[in-house]
Image (cartoon, rainbow over all chains, first blue to last red; front, side):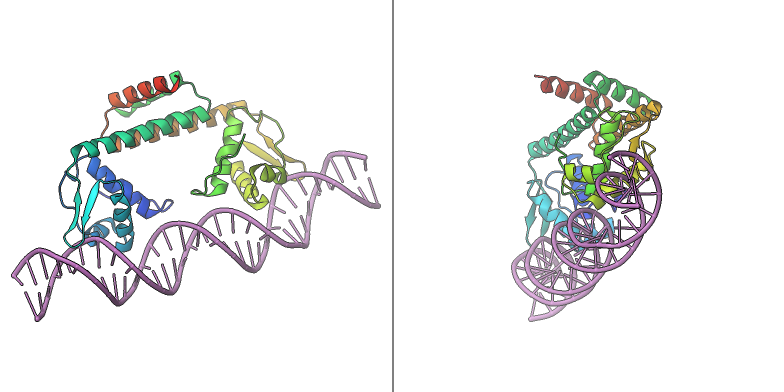
Amino acid sequence: MPWNLDSKRPIYEQLIERVMQDIVTGNYKPGEKLPSVRELATLAAVNPNTMQRALAELETSGLINTQRTSGRFVTDDAGLIQQARQNLALTQVRTYIYQMQQLQITPDEMQQLLAKTLEEGTL
Amino acid sequence: MPWNLDSKRPIYEQLIERVMQDIVTGNYKPGEKLPSVRELATLAAVNPNTMQRALAELETSGLINTQRTSGRFVTDDAGLIQQARQNLALTQVRTYIYQMQQLQITPDEMQQLLAKTLEEGTL
DNA sequence: ATTATTGTATTAAAGAGCTAATACAGTAAT
DNA sequence: ATTACTGTATTAGCTCTTTAATACAATAAT
C-alpha cells in the first residue's frame, strides 16, 4: 500500500486523510495501537515532524487518542468511526454536486453521467 | 458574481478555473472579447500580474486567443467549448468515484447517496 | 501625429507555509 | 539504574505565490 503523496498539496494534509481512511475502512481496527510516529514516518517516506503534525491534528477528530509514552490508539467507539466515514462520503457527494452545478449540469445529467461512467469502469 | 477566492490554493489557478467556467457556461460567448487584463484584475481584486498569468496559461487550452494589441477573445469554436465542458464534468465524476472507492463505498451506494442528497437539496 | 489602450517582460521583495534537523521529556521494559 | 521507546518542542531554512513597480511594444482611436 504505497502512500501516493502528491507534491502539489501539503503532505501533512494528505497524511491526515490517508490515516483517517485507514481507520474508517477498518484497516486500523478500533482500539488498535498505531505504529509510532517514527515508524509511520518511515513507512510514508516522510519526515517524523510531518507525520507528527498530521497525527496531532487527526487527534482533534477524536478518531485517535494519545498516551504520552505508550503511543497512539484508534478510538474504540465504532459508532464514531462509522459516523466519520459517513461524513467523508457526504462531503464527497456535496463537492460533486457543487462542481457540476458550476458547470450548469442538471441533477439528471449528474446521475446519468455517474451511471454511465460506473459501467465503463467495470469493464 | 463575486470571485470567491480561497487563500488555500494558488489564486492564479482559481482564476483559470473561474474564467474557464465562465466560458463553458456561456457567460462569455464564443467570439466575444474578454475584458482587459487590468479590468479583470480589478474585478477579481487581484494584482494584474496574477491575472495575466492566469490568462496566459488559459490560452494553452485553446479556449481563448490573444491579439497582441486589441485584447483576448473567446474562441468561436463552439465544439471546442462544449468538449471542454464535457471534460470538466468527466473529471468531476471520476474524482467522485475514486474518492468513494477509497472509502470502500460500492457503486450502488454512490448512486443512492447522490440521489438522496439531490432530493434533499431541492427542498 | 498624438493619445490611450492592449498584452508582455523584468526584477525585487515580501509573506506564508511546509519541511527538516535536533534536542527534550516522560515512561515502560530490562 | 539503565536502556529503549513513546510523543513533543524549537528553530531554522527552503520554496512557492503573490504583489509591486516599472518599462516596453504594438495598434486602435482621436
